[in-house]
Length: 262
Length: 311
Image (cartoon, rainbow over all chains, first blue to last red; front, top):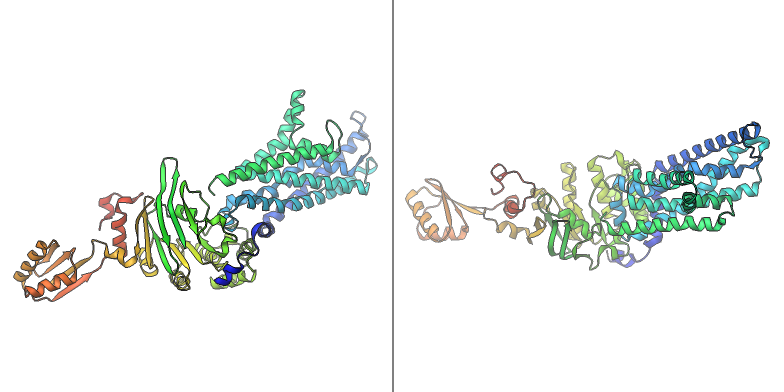
């Protein structure tokens, strides 16, 4: 026992919490199912977008978008696929509550902000890798279907895929924060779906001031960043806005986690 | 060591734990008793930093749980055997746990062995019976070789062999000089396991004493006296009553004496030359002593007449 007490100062802390979260993430099958599902949906949506891109170019009564990079198609697909992609980020926190594991986890890492931070530290590289791989996968799925209406400039496609990865990482942290506030999977999924997908469409449909307000939404800002749009704000501003949303969600999550009994 | 100072938890109007102050000392098994809803689990959760006290403090090893660096290496707890991810194997669960507190991974195999889960270590925890989950929880409590251990209802779902194993484990952990706090509903089990008892009811401290003292304090302790000489027995009864004891004549030749000791009754019988065929002390069981202590504070009890809580 005295030996334990003496060595108890080594290890643990934030690195320990990160190691534990990493182990937890990869030791349940649901993580793999989520990723596999996201990959399948990404490939399907990119194929669909490629097919309609070709259709638009080959039918006179349709707009004529011209030649497009496969990477652009992958970025367009993110708008639809993101919720599936973010499922992994969501389960990292909501499964704690649905299984009751949180009552164990908080004994391992009782400093609650450290626990949330550890989850984010694990999620950022994982989601970046997932987004990047899915971006490449989507571009690869779109490319053969685009035919002569598409290009595959390798450095650009890689850059696009990494942009998707960056957005996935930031949106993943946002989802984690929302999950920490709401605790339930259904509530988190609904909220993330509303904020990232429904609200931009709604505000866009309103037009005028609504559309302006829509520009500060995380998914709209993220889309600007991924596309490298200069208007109405630069891509880095877009990234900053998305990061801001993630930071607010994390602060709210940390506050709720700290305040409420587990 | 566990120290509670004025520990209080309120949920709106209800007070779950009220101004609880006590020390749980190392080297012994302390039983933690109380009726359902008495605040046992809430107290344990506050000790472990899961719930925030409304007032007062709970310290383990002299500090709040959350202030311990690598708490699993100081404090081990079995709170809720089902607090695991059903899809994760027992081994992966304990491995994540070990990594969180810088505990060497080889400890995982060791504790799995100690609780007897080696054959199912790679099976998903969701497939475990309550007894197996309980063993997994105990493995987690032992993982960091901690000096303080808390077990909330550890024998739930265990078979008689498992119950005995937990009892011996708690004993041996205390004998190694660790602080062991065990909550249970099973009085007979507590009587066998604990050295000291902490009894709470409706969130208040009812008793904090060695187990023998708790039993000795019971009004159910009595002396049975039997004599063939009914006249002299009646005389003895009168004198005992005069001395402030309560006497109940069971039959012409036998009576039960309450609030008296076998020494007092025996001495008086000798002085009155009562021939005794039987002089026997009947101690209350822990269950009887406990029932008396908590009779006033049963939250979800049956009506007194039906429950017979005073007996």
